[in-house]
Amino acid sequence: MTREVTLCVVVMVTLMATGLLMVYSIGAAPNLDDTLVYKHLVYVIVGFAGFLIMSRFDYHYLATPILLRYVVLGTLILLLLPRAPIIGLERGGAARWIGLGPFTFQPSELAKFVLVILLAARLTQYQEKIKGPIAGFIMPLTITGIFVVPVIMQRDVGIPMVMVASVFVMMWVAGTQKIFIWGLGTLPVLGFVPLIMWSGYRVSRMRAFLDPWSDRDNAGYQLIQSMSAFAQGGLWGRGAGAGEQKLGYLPAAHTDFIYAIIGEELGLVGTGLVLVAFAVLVYAAFRIAANADDMYGTLLATGITSLIVVQAFFIMAVTLGLLPTKGLPLPFVSYGGSALIVNLAMMGVLVNVGIQAHERAPTRPKTKRKTTPKKHSKTAKVRPAAASVGR
Image (cartoon, rainbow, N blue to C red; front, top):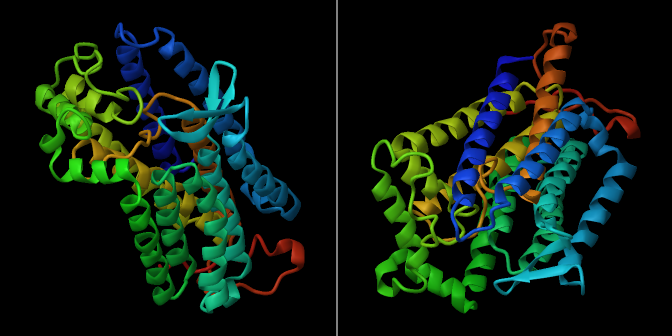
């Protein structure tokens, strides 16, 4: 196992252990379900099993046309089910979940993973035409829209923003012309701004971000309590289990704002170590992407890494009041569910990319990586010769 793969696994397990400790601490509060930690442990076990399976599953099979076709179709169907009667669940005016007995599933979490798989396959397949407007801009934009639009219809803006950011990075690594990349970057501004302006509660969140004390009992309440948690934690924290914000003062303490609970109970040292852990993950994961066995592996690892770290840094910034409040879980740390399971499965794929590159490294000829792959048969297009990633 390579050093980068080892780092990724160590960081992942460390963050999961931190999350388990925090969920146990929060679940002990009398205002929450005392079975919270047990449910989270179930998600951890299921997710870790998915990680082990995907780490041994050849990632090239994910781009097999027939498998990819059914996975994409199944995901799009799942994105419609939250609005279906009986199984569809609505919370806070948003219909994003499917009810499965005592557990719930959020299809948009799976959708962002499938988006990366599909886009990595297509950007690799059309690598020879990547500089053109169709392969370099229209095709990625269309694929992104197919997944983003249904998620936005569920009144979710956070996950689509993470999706678009990941696509942005993947296009850059694939070699798309910069004008097309920046063109894609302007679309979220043109699209998300109207979504915010036409939604009353999103406007309230934006105002609360600019001045939370102007509406401290409503829109600004959560952000004020979050910053209060960091202030009370100080340098070393009040101690694991000794925090007060989880006692009904800070909403979504076990999910969206768990980083604030870490700040209160483990202090600046604890939050700093979590930040360093994600920084190490960025380094190790992008090293895996850069040394992948082929362009498909490079793009797949790049997309997975972007999905995880963009969401992580976004939600940490939100809890610190550096970005407007948006409900997203902190990867590997927040209370489990579909997000934890999907993130662990993605990490399994990332590890598999690193393992395969390490296993094939001694047998690969020491030649300079080409920017344009050679012609291959139809079945081999998803696994072209190694291509340049800007090194």
